[in-house]
Length: 279
Length: 310
Image 1 (cartoon, rainbow over the protein chains, first blue to last red):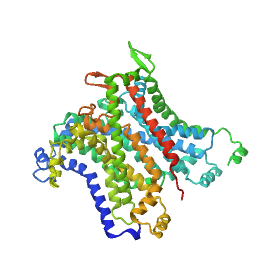
Image 2: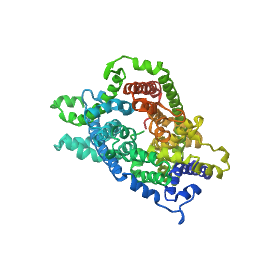
Image 3: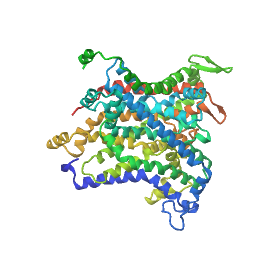
Image 4: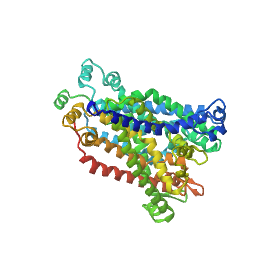
């Protein structure tokens, strides 16, 4: 809405609605984090109060750190997410470049084939994926998860990135070719740096479902040394369901890293989304 | 371009293959073949330790045997309700928030945007458990809040009652995913050129009628994409129910959807032994449902949407 419509009551109403929804969005997270710093009695007596000198207590965090193997789970999640993300971005960008740059027989067909996975969730192939992983001895390895997540992330990455790569100026690439650059150099040196903002968007959209997934860790890698943080937290919560301090601390520990990462990347994310592809 | 290509007669362009191959291989091996494998697996059954071809026998069991059929129809029914609530609450509210955020003179809009997207980045485990705690009658958060606005009598353990559990879970799902329609619509609204809006204002179309008459028709393709994403996401949902209500999707299966039904069929639970073949049959049905839904969208909705280029 521009000048003509931005009357005072209208602006106030807009802020009222947005503030109300912001409270709804943040309230549950705040309640959990605030109460994780309180003693057991205070959690129940005054759940909505901030921790004070009398009610401040870190017993929950102590329990979590002594009981669960969270540093290891965290590391597993990090390895799986980072490696899958790297593979999705690299292979996705390569395929997107081939599809958007070259005319060859079967181009459209290949594009459609690779886009199929956007609509059909990989989860429906679980029965056969598990058999495949059992047959190749990859059950309870992080490799199994990385392979699955790479396959899961590729269709959307290819789709979004090829839309963006069509926007890279052809003159620039042709200039590179006249200077004798190989197609690989053109891709890695000229095109990739130019589509960096869209890579950030794809990165966020790929990363969130991988980090948060419960299904495949539960099925493919439930062993103690390959548990991801999501699965670890789920099992921990199940075991300690009556220990409210520990549960709230575990939830807070699971929230904070993602939240910090998100706050760091949120600018990039908005810029990536609003710059075009996902219209 | 075409004439240029024929004139140069380029040698075999190996690099195209090199660029495509890794993505193609991983995607085919881990996604397409297992999907095909699952469809095929649903036609077999384990008889005397051997996988034997039984045709559509598994599907006959799924629809004919009341022990399976009741569960399946219940899960499908719940899933449809889950989807309808998501569509009717999440998407309109998301569009409203995006429309408010996109007003050019609004202050703090970056803050609102960031805050409202926070639930979307949280994992299901956190969301499911956090809401379970907040709505728990053991912990007084929800009753206390209602008390503050004088509505304490309205409180009941919504997640624990058969009547209200499914609606509650659906609304939690809305809470979690509202950021996605909000962001996508917000991006679409920002791409509407200023000239269009100015022209509308010259014609005296402002405020609400400007939204309905000018902006909404322009963002319809984005609303279409959101609807289809919601559809696929909802008919594939599992995690939220599993973390908040457990694999049994209680109370008394009232929150059971296809994802949890598939999980139980595949892995078994309590007294029932897991049956991968029946799991594959259910996955096949989910595959067909999603395929039909996406097909309906592509043929009947997508083709009628008008796209405007600026």
